[in-house]
Length: 94
Image (cartoon, rainbow, N blue to C red):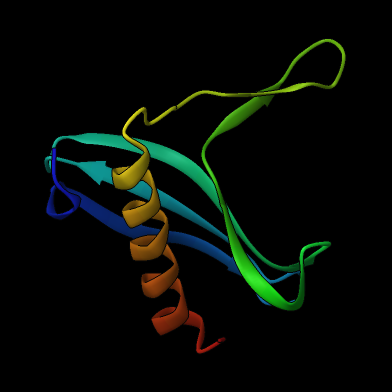
């Protein structure tokens, strides 16, 4: 699997909350919906950054479970970068 196998489609952008929902299309056939990307500050960074979260559900104890998990860490990091680049072009935010 290569990074070129992934296509990103922006589904919704909330300008007030700086949240973008995207769908990810793999191999042009499989669509994984509802990736949530937030432009926010973290405790580790004073500047706002884009945080990419795969689709998830909340369990009984309000614990979040990812529906999609990419085991290949270098590919996951490349995918996050690709998603953020597409969103930066769309929103014109840093």
